[in-house]
Image 1 (cartoon, rainbow, N blue to C red):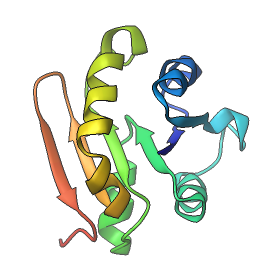
Image 2 (image 1 turned 180 degrees about the vertical axis):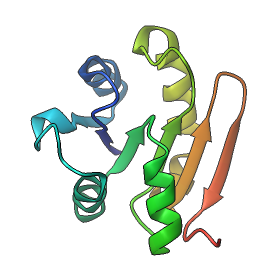
Image 3 (image 1 turned 45 degrees about the vertical axis):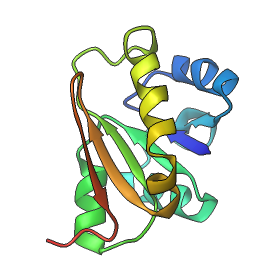
Image 4 (image 1 turned 60 degrees about the vertical axis):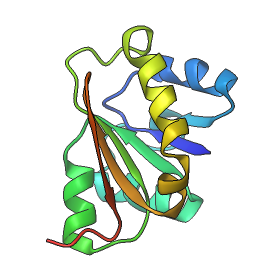
Length: 122
């Protein structure tokens, strides 16, 4: 599974995800730090990558565009560090691997998660 980490998450996620078998990239390795969300969104779609983010805008982009890709894995917690959130994020990425491969928006916090299959109907 290819994962693109948004700028609002630390690059320290990459060495946490890679040993778990994920192809993880931080946007700072690929594009401008001030890139607009649609640029990141389009890159992820073209590369068949999942956007891993804390930003609500990616869900909004999915809704506005009616896009079927890219999948978005959105974390809604206060502590975004991989030392705290890593095991849960990895477990959820594995648990919802099929949905993410087909096209989904997954929103997770410390206790629960919601899965919406793409395209989103508003």
